[in-house]
Every structure is written in C-alpha cells, then in structure tokens.
Length: 170
Image (cartoon, rainbow, N blue to C red; front, side, top):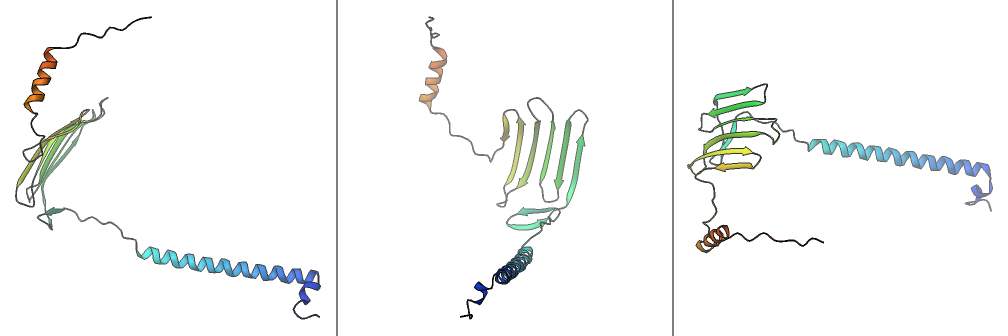
C-alpha cells in the first residue's frame, strides 16, 4: 500500500517535498512572467515614434513645401510689453504686439496673412483682451442681418422702458 499514497504517510518528509515542489512552481511561474514582460517591453518599444519637426515646413496647396524666413523680430520689455513679427518667402506674414500681466489678462492685437490652397489671399486682423479673441477679415463668416421686425421691437423696447417693479416690504 505504499505506491501513490506513500508521501502522505511519511510525515515531515512529505511536507518538505510539497514545499519544494510549490517553491519550484512559483519560481517557474515568476521566470515565465519576467520573460513575457521583457518580450512585451521589447515589442512595445519598436512602435514608439519620436516627433522630429522639420524647420520651416508649411502646408500650401496640399503639398508640403519648405519656406525660408525672410524677416523675424521679437522684443520683450521688462514692463510686460512684447512685440513679434515674421515673414516667409511664400507670402505668410504675421505680427502681434501686446502687454502681459494686466489684471484682466494679456492684451494683444495683431494680424496675419497667407494665401489659401485655392489661391485666395487671406488677411485677418485681431484683438485679444478680456472679451476674448476678436478677429476681423473679409473671408470670415458673418451672421445674417437682424430681421426688420426684430429691429423695430428692440427700438420700441428701448423707447418704452418698463416702470421699476415695486417690491412689497414686510
């Protein structure tokens, strides 16, 4: 009756064999996990792409071209005022001046211009202040005109303000 049940009846020796077997299985499992993790890291590292910008690349007409910078300025004042501008050989130009550190935030005004892929010259002037970014230009969308009936209603309301509401005091 010793056969397969021999370890069960041997006492301390069987416990020692079971512990060795368990430790051996844990070591194999841990080594397998380390190998799988290492393979995963190696495979993942091959898919990492590093961003390397190409200086002066711009989009124009659907094909990428390199445009040289013809003029570039940048001025910073200790009082928070600044100004910058640039112009490229393909007709892109921009400039801005402003003042940072104001209680209401940065105050700026400037403009930029370029030629669209369709060959249309685009020019935009803007102001950026506590009221947000406010662009102006011929190609920017504009809201439809206010209907005449609404204009008359606004004029009437402005000409006939309501009497102040009286509140009851208790």
